[in-house]
Amino acid sequence: MSADRVTAHRNIVYATARRFAPPNRVAEHVVRATPVQCPQVPGLLETAMGTGSLEMVEDCLTLNVFTPTNASDDNSSSSQASLPVLVWIHGGAFTNGTANAAWYDGTNLAVRGCVVVAINYRLGSFGFTGRSDHGLLDQITALEWVRDNIARFGGDANNVTIFGESAGGCSVLALMAAPQAATLFHRAWAMSPSIGQMRTVERAEQSQKLLLQELGAASIEDARDAGVDDMVAAQGRTLRDPKDIVTMFSPTIGGDVLPLDAHQRVHRDKRPLVIGTLRDESRLWVALNPAAANLTEDDARVHFAERFGADADRAWKSYSELRPGSSPAQMLAALQSDESFRAPAWRVIDGRDRAGSPTWSYFFTWPTPVFGGVLGACHGLDIPFVFDNVTVPGVDMFIGQSAAHRPIADALAGALLSFARTGEAPWQATESKRTAWQIDERTDVLVDPERALYDLWNR
Image (cartoon, rainbow, N blue to C red):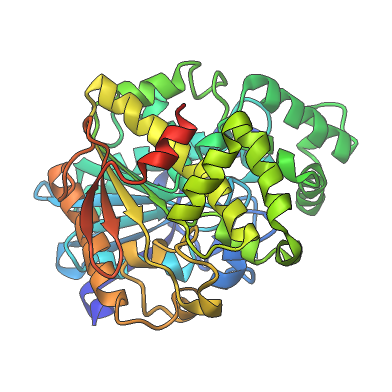
């Protein structure tokens, strides 16, 4: 069994922090007795992962390290450390999630020949109030801890790959743009990055103002003394308007961590990048929205008209051909999938191709069979496969039962390890050909996939 060949070092404290203040590295080796998560209201995936019962504390800056047993020597500093290091940044819209979810257990990845680190960072109003982006600073501090300590666990500090999904994927790109992280990692793997969450300074200042109003606080100094539960409740009240959720608490371009040219820095960064998206990202939310069942074609076409204007009919025809058999709600989900995830990813790929930065793309199209298949290849579905955690208890409620599990996990986890070792993904780079590795029951390299949709979003 994998667990017999991997040692898990859990709940290591890498930093402490006062509220609304930068993190301070912990010099000594401190381990918490029990796992914790940062204060939050658990979201849909967190509920599915069963992490809602974990203790929530503000002092939550911990990480877990998974290393092959014969590579770990926690009592010495080995100069022979040679295993590639994978640092996981969890998602959750920057407002929820935890590194301690069973889905993020690094055992099955580590047994393949690497060291896996999963980190916690401050969330929501605790990590992203105003322009200071302390949650991003937490991630940077965790990477500094990795640089200085990972050799003790058999890892190579000169071969660090960061990877993350959704807000974690957005964090991966943000860290590529952050000057303070320029030397802290060497490759990056972004899964369904929520690029649209990167906000302006004006939005960050508005978010802080709204939070203070909800707390009844006159200043940030006053808010330092608010109770944790009061902070979480006030944060929840600021998120009542759905259209304002994604940028209320998130990284700030032009703030204290990310420069104004953050997107251009990602394009120019010569560190190898893999960026992946799923065909049906937004079906996860549409399927769970009771109102979606009553959506008519006319209702869905209104959204197409708002987005594509005079091209709305052409867009509807293109989506109908590429998503045959879709209900009106699923057609809307297809539009929203591309708007929020795939089109922004295409822009990153195009920008890096123009700059000559090494980039690979994957397109995950395997549909989960649960709930009669209505979720399709939805947001987060690639997580159990990239960790090779398809047999972790509870995962089956998301991925069902299928003979495809093992080959997909071997392909995706294997590709991640190959990329971490060599700096090259085991399929053709994007360059100017828009190549993408399709992950389904069988894998294939596609050239210029779904060009009609690409043209709609880049017209």
